[in-house]
Amino acid sequence: MEKLSIIKIGGNIIEDETSLNEFLQLFSNLEGKKILVHGGGKKATQISAKLGIEAKMNNGRRITDAETLEVITMVYGGLVNKNMVAKLQALNTNAIGLTGADINSIKSDKRPVKEIDYGFVGDVKKVNHVAIDKLMKADFTPVFCAITHDGNGQLLNTNADTITSTIAVGMSKIYETSIYYCFELNGVLSDFNDKKSVIKIINSEIYQQLLEDKIIVDGMLPKLENCFDALKNGVHQVKMGNTTMLTKENELYTTITL
Image (tube, rainbow, N blue to C red; front, top):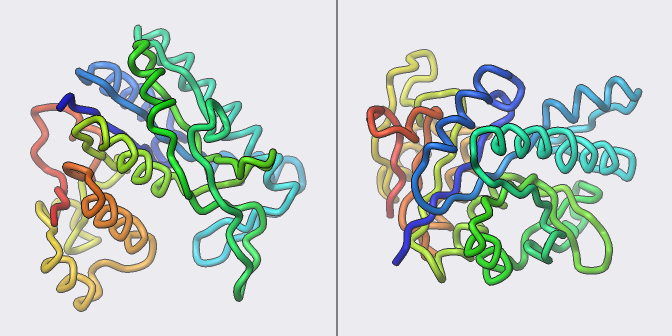
């Protein structure tokens, strides 16, 4: 089975021009088939503030009203995505920027209202792995932003980590897929104040222990849930760490396995 790398980058890398350029160079150097997924939440919050639109959050998740959706579409699908695509072209990577609406690649349902109305937020239902593969077979490198659609003309703001894992699960029908979650830390840390305290391997048992010891909390919880879901559904491996884990030299990162 041919290998496919799916790389997701966090907002802190996107925000810092130097970090972003270094990452895109590493991404371009990666051999074989690859897909890039990005968010852009911090940039969306900045642009919202300039437009006088207040960013509304609940437990770290953005509430997306109609106005906010307009900003997110402009920022994720336009500003952030096209800048990245242009930079990748300069590095001889023939990238194509996409939302989930393009080539009907990722369909979502609008999140149902329970205690909180998240507005125009999507929960991924279907990844069109055949359509995405057509682009890859034509030697294009897809760059997905964190926007999907419902199939009825409505765009939806969607968690970029979830998009990454669901694309990986869909593509694992054709490829041996690996996910790389790149952020500013070296991996999952046992002590947040010690940046070198990387937990090198997390399996299901270790994960339960880390939950009990309250080492994995807050934003890392949905991230790791996504990882285990992906592994249970056909993804080959998941790695988490800083962008240098895309090189052969770096051995300091976290590998998630079942």
